[in-house]
Length: 110
Figure (cartoon, rainbow, N blue to C red):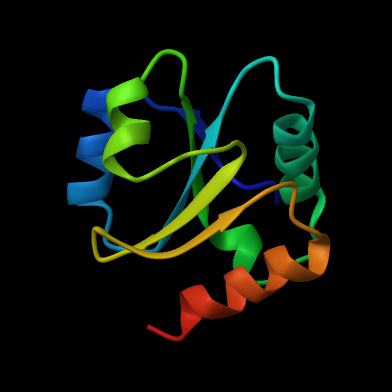
């Protein structure tokens, strides 16, 4: 099963943050960013486990600069794990599969 990926504008992001009862990932990207595409591809191809169960919301920082600023996004890709509506873990860069799996494990600890 591939993670559910949605492109989020500010309104959809806030709705997801406030309403989602399970952990989810926000991935801040530029649409022209090759490391961003690498991360999204790697995220989609990770083996079964907690990371695969997380919903993924993609935020284009060119379209939503206020969201990027609010969450301190300085570079892309930036991945933020939200648990109970709050950012609990932030990672920057085209993370390895092992790093993504660690994030999945972290999502189950809370």
